[in-house]
Length: 86
Image (tube, rainbow, N blue to C red; front, side, top):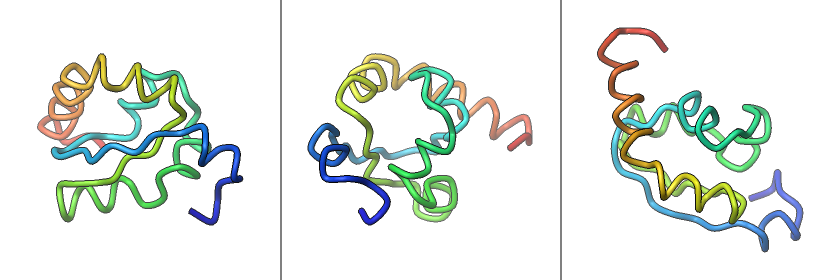
């Protein structure tokens, strides 16, 4: 990923996510700002909306939180989608 330094890449994990995750919901749960999330995951919302999958990359500590909370994050993402807000 061209946006990340070698240290950021080495200090991160990638996990394939499947489902209509919403970046705003993810960053709320893992306490990361949107600009940083977008550097790690360019085009996240567009790719998830079109293909339903994404190789999510996060710093290791944030990935641990994501994995612990991913069902809650997906549930809330789906609620957002169903309520029509983006």
